[in-house]
Image 1 (cartoon, rainbow, N blue to C red):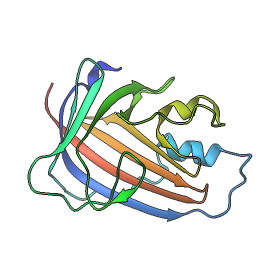
Image 2: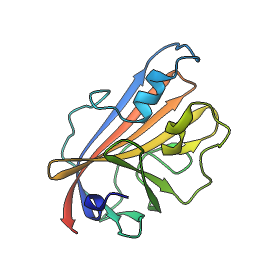
Image 3: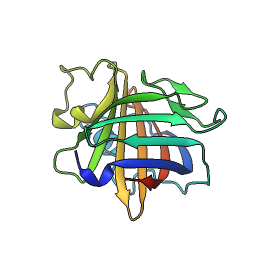
Image 4: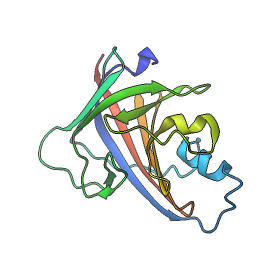
Length: 170
């Protein structure tokens, strides 16, 4: 895990991308992979100011997230890839992403299916039931941490939660 991600991070911005992409060629997974890897420039909306969520990343490679006040009303994806009306408390492990300056979050749930096609990028998935794929990628951008929870359903529907956090303490 990359040590620069360690610390307590507080939500200060949020956006939701709800997109229908249309039929894709299942033999060409590049659009799906780019979306799930949160490739820069693909579906990055402007975030609006929001607060109320704390993400803690520890040196031992674990994380936890919790609300920091009253229940939030933000479209989100739970540990099973289901869209919810607010984030749920979660904890798990942080993994590096090979060849990229990002990390991915993996709640303490069953891992992504090992028999899925698509090569190494499947290692970043926090959820994969064969129809719905969910990744949870963090990247540092200046003094903030940008989180992309990217979802692809049936290779047709692409959605994304974008959350921006500011560091509270290391």
